[in-house]
Image 1 (tube, helix red, strand yellow):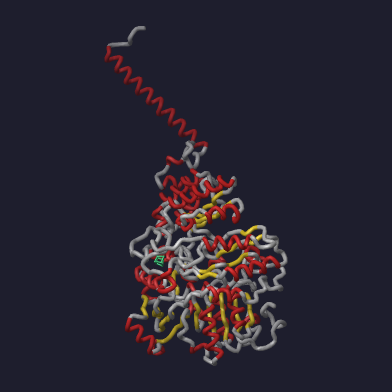
Image 2: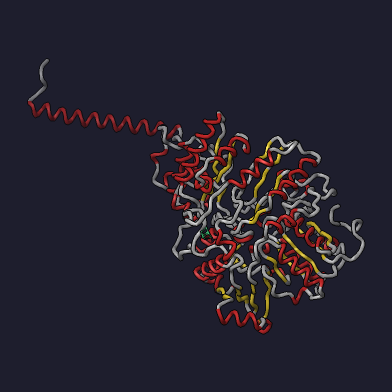
Length: 633
Ligand code: SF4
């Protein structure tokens, strides 16, 4: 049975009312489904208000007994509502029928302010991507400003950051003992605002001893880019369970981030995924919810990612420590899928942020957290990284041997560098043979090593090696399958010359991406920090940032240099980069000159050659003269 979203489904005072920015889909790929089922499993009644539009929606269930929970959804509302060019999207795959406009911009702020206006005495707890990634003062691309913590702008009482199961369970346990939400201040994985006099004695002791660290304040980070980069580094260095308490002054208030939560064990993950999900959108959505189509027959096998791509926010939301479900739990879910109406024999995905990361990067991570001063993989591989696909491979084998299963796809991203570090080709061979259909999407992201370093991606040679191996295995298996490379334009560090090199590579492989991804500075990624500050927060060194609309358009157009609509922009880019040699008819050229330019060039060549002829004639004439006249035949 679905949890109630209307008065017809629930007639009483719920313990918790959960306001969400997307359509209610009771499927564990949605954070709101996990949170609501978890709260229910802890013995509390919960009613859901999806995408409220008016006061009547907020007040549908009246004032809850314990408080409101608010989540913007699985995507930040600004990313969901706008393209990177800041143009409003015409579709929202997380709403009924894909209709846009049901989730307001900065929806967590909008929802919380409405709740605080209607129920000033009721506690409000926020969580999910939007709250989590905007918990400190942060650069906001859409307003081009540094905004304060979302706790300050929304008026919420408590913020849950990262994955919410453990903090929610602790908060619910305290609530059930009668502790009011307003007094819950020391749960790991939460943030709150407090006046100076309200800081606990224990926290003050930690501040004195260095166990709690003070980041540059909101005023400092909005006026000083170096202070912003310093604050960002402190926040990213303290984002797993080994991290310290962090504080950031917001005017007269302290934003306090309690220490991060511990990762979930496999048993805890299994318990979360065993909750009684309906695995469908609420039946009131007659036109369906487009996002469900892709995930209805997909299985989340892991959380967390030690890849640390600098443009990805998951590092700060799910963390670097990979947490996995047991094989039994995954197999049980797969069996359930095969019984579901509409199952046609295809499991669409078995993965997570990175499909082929099934375990923590090394033994040390679970004991003392991920290293602060180095990355596990990416631009450089850590010597301690443990590489094995054995367990994932045997899981995939078990899944594809299930009755009624025709094929198990792997559609979550595969880290090709991790595949290359595996001494055995067994995984790649079986992936190619059984788990893709025609193409494999991978993310080299660029060809220029200096850009890749800024993304924390492996050197381009690793991708080329992977491509060679992929092609060789396909040839051996008698298959014609292709790699589809994902690429990003205008990432910090990427000059126009780098963008031209990328276009030259695409021409060399005769590939033009259907869609191109311009770097999108979403909240709280390392790349966004570089974009805003022009500094690499790890080194403090300056980074080139393509910021102007014109340069971004040129870099983007170069990736699709063959499109007619990009012709003028590509030519402008090549001229600006001093690469007119790529405008012409040669096999290495990216674009041809226009007809008029070709005619003019031809005339110029002819004129030059006749000038040359004349001058040769003159020289010859001089020679003839010098020799004293023409030789007689
Ligand atoms: S030792 Fe290496 S693999 Fe382990 S956490 Fe540190 S960087 Fe990652």
